[in-house]
Image: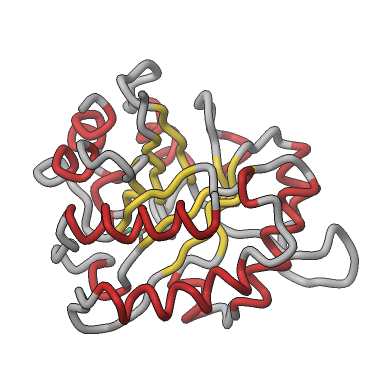
Length: 228
Ligand code: PGA
């Protein structure tokens, strides 16, 4: 079965021209399904079969300066929305309750939420401790939601942007836990995924794909990942 590879460009690139150039160099047909998540400001001007947003507000419209709503994403035919990324939790103050409200708001517009969970600033591979924290994040984050329509991305925070990835076996174990307990549509792994380690993750039975940050900004490397 095809795996799902989501590119999280974060706050890159810094010009529309460079964003369009990057999108234009990603293969339109690949072995895996691909979703590009450029910065919100470029979403309407990037053409790619599947686009996602990096965040959205939980209200549809109103006096909410600086926000983008699921209604607006729907209008642009955006199909996916990353919710609760650790950088949103850190810089935007997203709590598990906010993650839940955002996930509900995108689902109401038939946009697939990619709910990010994970924690820890130092290497943490104690499966039981990880599961304990994820339980809290997901019990609240997915509360009252039809989980079969949601994707969860497991991203150990210590692995994000550090060049230090979790082991594929750890990712597999955690994916099995999340699927069994929450019956979500898919579980992705994220955290320093790159062309060198992607195959090991993608050959795990229960890792349904990858959320790729840094490596998604390098067209050649990303094209390798999506064709594994
Ligand atoms: P990274 O980021 O691949 O650069 O570690 C992943 C993410 O934050 O989604």
